[in-house]
Length: 91
Image (cartoon, rainbow, N blue to C red; front, top):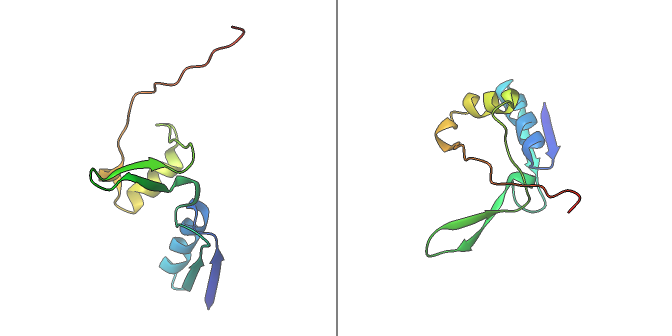
């Protein structure tokens, strides 16, 4: 069976991966850049510096997503950084 997936974000790519591993022929249709909200773009070609396209993060408690990363042998690409985010409330 041939299956078309509309959207190359994390959900579309995960569904495509699972279906293809089950033996289905899968085509992912993406209007822009694969990765959806998790994609990035280059801000300096000389230093290979990238910036995330949208604000996103992974918590160490996001076990399902971390398992997906491990399932695809991508742990070496995952780095943990201390949070430097603050919130100001009522002045």
